[in-house]
Amino acid sequence: MTALNPAAHSIPEEEELIPKKKAGKAVEGGVAVRQKSVWATVIAAIIAIMWTIPTFGLLVTSFRPQIDVLRSGWWTVWQDPQFTLENYQEALFGGTTNLSTYFVNSFIITIPAVIIPISIACLAAYGFAWVNFKLAGVLFVAVFALQIVPIQVTLIPLLKLFVSAGLAGTFWPIWIAHSIFALPLAIYLLHNFMSELPKELFEAARVDGAGHLTIFFRILLPLMLPAIAAFAIFQFLWVWNDLLVGLTFGASPEVAPLTVRIAELSGTRGSAWHLLSAGAFISMVVPLIVFISMQRYFVRGLLAGSVKG
Amino acid sequence: MSTAEKFLQMFAALGLFAVTFAILLFAVSKVRGRNSERAFAIGFIGPTAVMLTVGLIYPAILTVIGSFKNAKGTAWVGLDNYVELFTTTEYQRVLVNTGIWVLLVPVAATAIGLLYAVLVDRTRTESFSKALVFLPMAISMVGAGIIWKFVYEFKPTQLPQIGLANQLLKWFGLDTYQFLITDPWNTFFLIVVMVWIQAGFAMTVLSASIKAIPDDIIEAAKLDGVSAMQMFRKITVPSIRPGIIVVVTTIAIGTLKVFDVVRTMTGGQFKTSVVANEFYNQSFRYDNNGLGGALAVLLFILVVPIIVYNITQLRKAAN
Image (tube, rainbow over all chains, first blue to last red; front, side, top):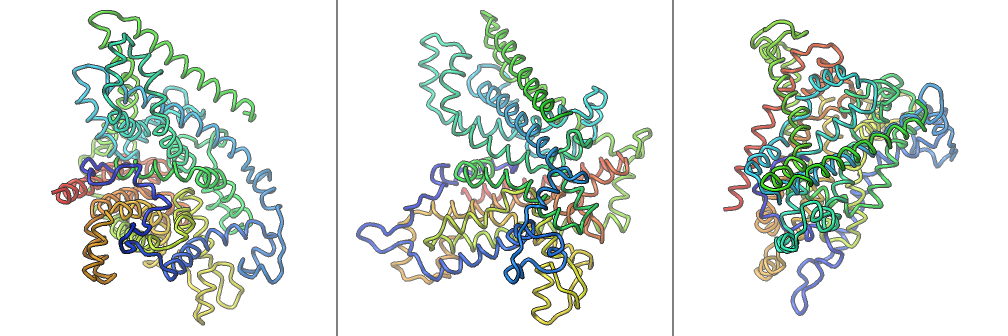
């Protein structure tokens, strides 16, 4: 989501990008502009279900007894329905997998890796938009341009820095790395949002004698909440689902996130499908809950990140 | 560390962060007079400047320098690492694979996403259908890799199958197939996974663009009696051209860096490796910082033409 699209101004405003339920209804007194079709509905539903079959298959498998998983396909489950929670039990707490520890690690990694970059980005976005200083323009363009740097370019030297700072094996390298990598996009999006707010707000506050801190905390932050929420969800899923940063900076099992452990299991125990399927869903349950409950915000963040970013 | 200790460490870190920033902001707010505004600039932007300089710019420069050195970084080797990338058969294959990924994934995902967006625009169950197609985008690529590895799971033909793809082959009376092992088609079966993930993204963005096409344009076209096909080609596609460009380039950049899918499903074996996967192996598995650095720099260089394409195309569309 780090494409640079400075000229994407012919894209409609964010609010309109969220399809409204009523959109496309017949125009009053005119022809039905966007007709609904039963055929389209049926075909779309069939494709949507087909799209979900691979996931559904693994979900069913994760609840089947180990012996059945290896002996027959999940689509035969209706012939002899046997379900168990044993796979989850073993994946979470079994000595060889112990995913519960990694589940905790993922939370420990993700929460600061969302809060810290967003806080810093809010400050920076405000600084670029409303604090008067000479280099503001140049620095903002530099931050904007940094979006195109692939994180791979930074990993080896960054790891060496963390090792020489004595931070290797702790959560710090993962928190710091995620925070750094999130900044360019976060600042860009928040700055965009901020510069759309009416200037008078700030000018009036300044005339009343409010300082930057008062304006920032009292006026700006409350207005920024929707943008902050959208980016927070986006960043949460990004960090939770990340593999590369976790692998690079979280090699020790003490701090490794779920994705790292599950990728490892996929290599070492590639045919233990009863464990892999349960493990995969343990790692997916949080993003799925976040996605289903906050789909609207997530989609908005995604659209802002790709279309406007 | 116990779970409680981990949480304690997390709250301690967050507390430290909050206190540091409170002190910093308090300090800059105390500066009076001419330097006040400058102090605020440092307080607000300083942390970002430090983090991006130390964490992004400085390491990137070191990596570029390192790519001209040997594996341990002890001696200069000139362009040797780059020469190796482009001349050995093994790496040529990695480059070709990456090229196939970057060409196929954006095109296929955008095409599917666009067609689905047009289709779903005419349905009554829009949000349900969209949510299901979008779902793969919310889960990790590691999870997606495992889902599809299971779909492709191989058993000899005479045995009962547990992978859906091979069961389909059997239902059609064909022999089962090593989807992930048989070169060169295995790369295409990996690409299917990425298309499966990215189509939802394309659909979401393009569907939003389609909704934004003004009703009167569609109405006018309908009154002129255009067919559905003409409507799609003459009205829909040109109207959402900027959206299509953004989607294609965003997916292309994401695909260029694809790593999780390949690593989870084949580990880059059976000639399926791509630049980002090879970068990880060389840098962290074989400790070859020179070659790893060269691969990272190559990723960086490959992003540039995509961005340039994006900017020039969007400029063109705007005029």
